[in-house]
Length: 328
Image (cartoon, rainbow, N blue to C red; front, side, top):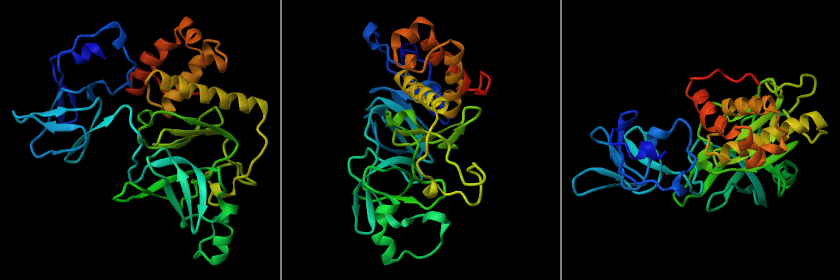
């Protein structure tokens, strides 16, 4: 990261360029970076130039000479005319359309309080969920009395951010058949910056038979793919996450789930983005190198066989299109 930071050559992120402030690197300043985002990483003092008419957002101020300057360390983002910096380390705030993984902490009148890692609890109203069996009807007083049958305290759920109130409070919705209670898996927490908004956040990894729910809030769920009676597939008109029940997970599938979980933690420890492509690539590479699932959590064992180099180099090339797509 330091060689790019000291460069006087502007690096472009779309129509935005970054003029980096000269910086002397010390041995203790070598930090992992997020692959594919080097040109968009900024540090305090870096000058940001953009087309005329841009709006300054979080982490950007205007100097006396008219230049826009970064005030925090993070990733430069642009949405239409709005230019802002997404900090590398920050508490998740939420945006409309984000897929999140949360934990039910309280059952209230006609709504659930959900912990998703924000500064205040998010809320899921009973009218914003899909009833079991894909039933389409108005919610009744009987549904209110049965709220604990739908979601109870400490249940892990997947949902989508429907609205962000002026106070910062988030309203969630789980009307889609793919959202609901998560079963038969393990829960992981990561820095929110490791999970960017992408095409698919609920993915069954090909050739692995393991489903991953990547929450934009940095909360991830790794589990056995949910089954529908008579088909065993998710892509059916009768599927609903609300109908998924707890079931036995065999030793072989449990080992694959644990390896995927540890692969996600290894990616996050190296500052890599968690994407289905990176997961599949590193999972396959760890098998080729003879690593046990538990070895992915031991930095010395990963370094002894060069897995750290794989994480920082090969998966970065794979993400930017230089490598082959993972096949399992």
